[in-house]
Image (cartoon, rainbow, N blue to C red; front, top):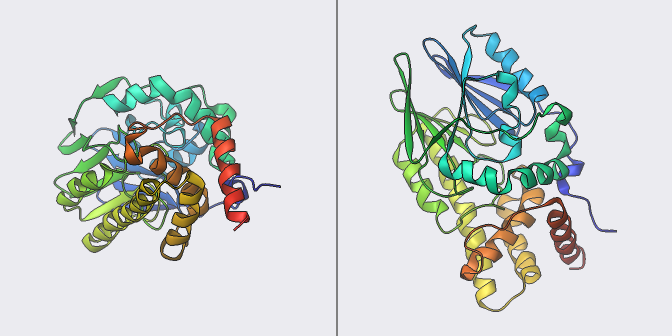
Length: 322
């Protein structure tokens, strides 16, 4: 019998941390589960990524209320993935902010992604019945939007394609604190099933050029030194380059997806296998690399629950039969 999704075996609850990064700046992290950022301004609160369901968002709200009674007026979607944004309704925000490309992805594939992600990783969708539907932004920007929360300046920026074509980072230029979304991971395997591997490293170079002193990755611990920030950015880039170059070379040599998967998995495992959700992400990642290499699918194909299952079983059989 073929293996279930690796994520189906990840059932243990994670220890939540609510880390203060500066005056009014917090990171909600949970041992490699999706992170949420909190920015408290003079008269309101902004949340970066909401958790996957309104039920799960209530724990973020509880922690916010321990440090401020200011209204939560703003939500920023770092990208369109369901696990990041379907908890938005719990905050009852005045504004939900996203890049133009993120909005377009919601239109194109938001519902399929919702159904796909719930099937892949059920633990991350506690109380999924509380989700009222897709999360739609009411403020859409092209490249950059500046929000003043009183005296606090917040830059919301689309620096380039990477994890998806619409990724957004939130940058506090005075404090030099970055909320990176899934453009940067730390001790957690990047999910690249909807990625642009050929462009992502250049986007990471732009992030590195900001010279963040503190950084909240999409997954992993909040990073509180410039050295740790650089380590996370460069570590994410190394993973992408190692994986994509392997698949690219294999495809150029005429090898099948299954052959490229077996070879690349074997190359990545010693260096990155200890990262959170490695076995869950890599089949999706390598499949997207194979699609992108050679220009066959410059834009990611839509993942559906049916496609997820077909891909997963076919590639697990390759590993099991080695």
